[in-house]
Length: 126
Image (cartoon, rainbow, N blue to C red; front, side, top):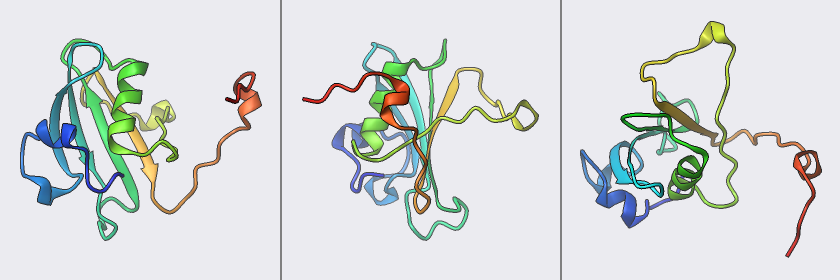
């Protein structure tokens, strides 16, 4: 996660202050004109509870966040070169406490494998 967090995030912090780092709840107007509710954890390297995971939950009041909103949140918390994922776990281990919530995850010490870019589509380099 970015250290320190961007001012835009700090302006939307609902509890605590800058000393909390990347922990806590935030509420920001998203890029599509609706408020996004964010809860972040796993910021500190010595956080035994997080077990090496950085995490941000993203929710809205009326619908799940869309791709543009999730990319926007990813860019607030992580740099362009950090790989962050959304998991689709087996149904047997689903946890769904909010109908309109999605999650972003990054492990601090384990590099997430990624497919070759040509699996996704034609590469365009500038």
